[in-house]
Length: 116
Length: 113
Image 1 (tube, rainbow over the protein chains, first blue to last red):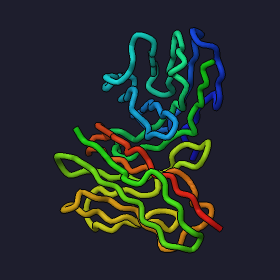
Image 2: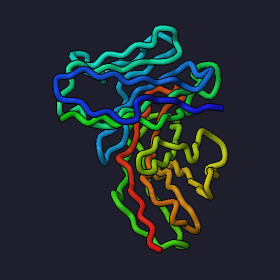
Image 3: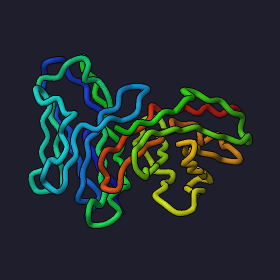
Image 4: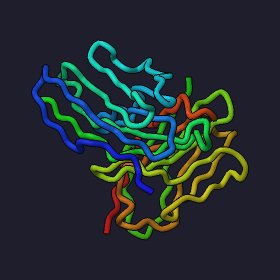
């Protein structure tokens, strides 16, 4: 079974440029999460989807961050414009959600973003 | 709101020695507890989890953890560490709907040959 897939793995951009990250969850997983992980810290939740609905986006900086999961499968996280402080690893995770073991999250390898 | 603390930022052990990584949590109800490991440049891999039942849980790679409600702790242990165990270890707490998932700050493990 394929795990959570993320792309790109690495991205270097200049500040004020836009950037997008893509995530494809494990097949059958209804819940999808985006996390931000700063260097030397634990991941922090940005947004959680139940199917195509964003059910928790309280920690998403909505002035510059946006996310979508239009068909309830894969998801895109966008930053526009990027700032120097956005340099971090962006992790995507998924879980079965209400269909089963909704408590356990499985993580992708992450996208490492460097803003110059 | 729940929280997780991992008192040790960095631990160094010799290969073959035993290991214990500490985790304390704050949560109002029955917690769902997890340990994840993150190798450099990799995503987080689930080591083990505790939901209910036996308070000593076994995980992958020879790890185990013990839930102690009275101490609000969920410490991770391994009897004999291998060089490949060098990584960052994260404790996390969540609820039974997969919500309110909070990670600790992590403990970096170094293994001496």
